[in-house]
Image 1 (spheres, rainbow, N blue to C red):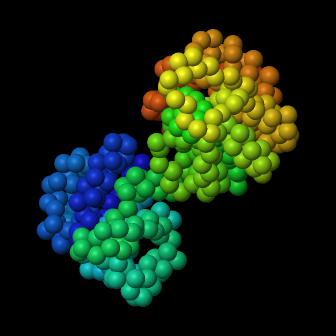
Image 2: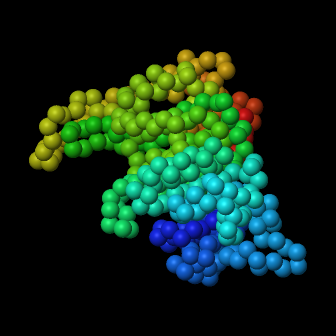
Image 3: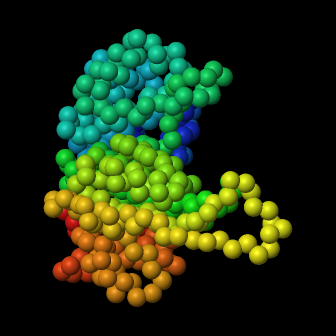
Amino acid sequence: MHVLLGVSSGIAIYKAVDLVSKLRKESFQIDIIMTENASKLISPSVFSAVGNCNVYTNTFNVNNGWIIHTELSQKTDIFVLAPATANTIAKIASGIADNLLTTVALAIPNATPKILVPTMNSRMLENLITQKNIEILKNNGWYVTEPEEGHLACGEIGKGRYPENQKIVETIKFLTAPKILKNKKVLVTAGPTREKIDPIRYISNYSSGKMGYSIAKVAKRLGAYVCLISGPTCLEKPYLIDNFIEVTSSQEMYEIVLSKFLEYDIIIMTAAIADFKVKNTSNKKIKKENFNLILELERTMDVLSELGKNKKENQILIGFAAETENFIEYGKEKLLKKNADYIIANNAKEVMGKDFTKVYVISKTKIEELEGSKEKVAEEIFKIII
């Protein structure tokens, strides 16, 4: 996948260097175009070194018939303008091509995805002319990654900050991924639950939520409407997700999932929902002087079983089996017992909290082994079930 990055001369240009670094780590092929003023702020050599790529600044640097603006505009899979100043936005919106960046921008085919990342002083951003120019680009197929609010370089506080680069990377993936889940609705649960002991303490497990969050992100990239129901995690809400609901306990997870699942085509129960909760919780902190403390536990509601009993014929229900032994055997048992369409079994000791995973996708007819990053495995899971 090739990304063509346009860099104009906003003070946020230093953050574009980090964007190039992230794109390189994601194995994107990169070419960069800088305006003359941008190259006065940061040397093109810095971008070239970080991205291991070519950096172009001069419209007239034509060699052996290779014309920069026509060749680069045809070569790329997606064009990203970050940071995009008010001046460069105005030029492109007005059809002005007076430097290499604006010339390339106008030569990009209409069907090629284009991302605009406006960054500037909040008053410049709010100016009606700037807003009109951004709207023109939106109406001409540009996807706008909105600037954030906060402390600006000029010392003011307002909207206009360069957004987190991970949002831009996620937008690139979203705009370039095949939409095999178009018109589908996907419900994903993720993370652990916490079962209260007293106002201070709780029972939980080691689930990080990473697998569920990866599945939700990938489902969105593939064109689905996605609802992610998450227990407590340290992860940021996935960018672009349609509906994000936070819960704490197994009972909350049960009630939310049961109230929503009939609206969805695919339900993926990745959450590590507690099997037990404390029968008699305390409204006051239990003092440590109670050396012989015994907690009486009771079973929580089995969410996957309830879904299996009540799912519609055209729904796909997927459960996860985090095991420490006999992964396939236990996965097969769970598939039948819970009336699921697929069970995804893994070795909890090896994959919980990690960025990479190895799973066995078990259906009634076959078993498939998948291994790799959790996002890559999520992509393969959707290919299998679709």
